Image 1 (cartoon, rainbow, N blue to C red):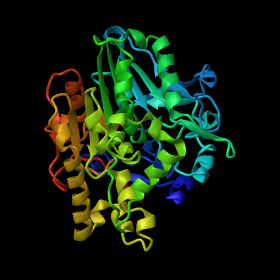
Image 2: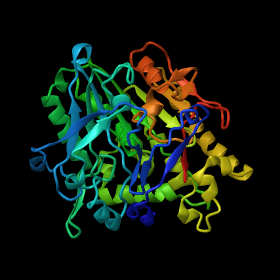
Image 3: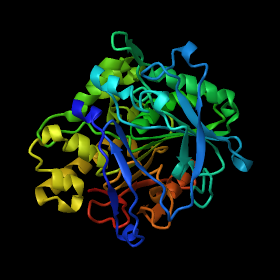
Length: 415
């Protein structure tokens, strides 16, 4: 796993989707092994997105809320207007984790560990878009993207003086919320905490804390996109992701900020896995996840460490290349996910959109969030499903049939 945290790889990715292929989309992606977010550059077919500048939290140092290298944390904020002036959407950035001193020291030299390297502005697309035709329910809300620079899903609280590392994710979370409350979030009449990947895990971890910021009259819900990481057995019979999470939890003393109701029954590493957290979340929570999550497939189920001879390489690069035994392992992975959410799915306030795609982070990308050829479940795009759930227009418990039944997927294919 150490190699996963310190190597930068540039890969071209194309969509494998019946409908998206007809548009000849061939965007260039960057997949970084210290960053679990697959990001897309601007396509000439789409209008240029709104670019939002980085704001550093200047009072953060006095609160001990700093990135891995001691620099200031930051966020990007676009104010709401009209009917959305008192509505707030907070998106927690994703980007993997660091689980060893070595991987965290490397991370200090990237935007995932230091604001010195963060982009000075970011595009607001998908759930962050300011256009009604791209983001029908949240386009005029106050929309915020909180940058991720601690390496533990905004949940660590320790340091390593010898390596000059600050593990202050929990303090960054608190400082960001305090800053946003002072910028008007305290007056919110409705608020949604969301996040993708490592940020999707963070939105689960901090969901009840987020609700506690507001009076009971404020409508507060949470969304986890691609944050449902399974405690899965890899193809070699090992526990690659459990080992990674164990390193994160121990190194950054994450147990201080995990729910005591979980720690009373399970070890801290188990309580970092969403399957053991979701039953402890009291605030309404929506799980958006691909059943064959592309990142988990690459880095948890069939990582190089579990497949040193590369027998999974063709299958990992394109699911169409998988043989029948590999497909069965992927179906078992999906079955484990569905089993892990079985209890959660029966609660009245929960929401689900589990599509049988090879994708990752579907709320931040415009093509998967809301577009002419977006993925559908029950004839609903993701944006409509989440809007219907948030505004209580409809109960949304959408679970796809197994691969290969869904021809609306925007599957990631690595070349």
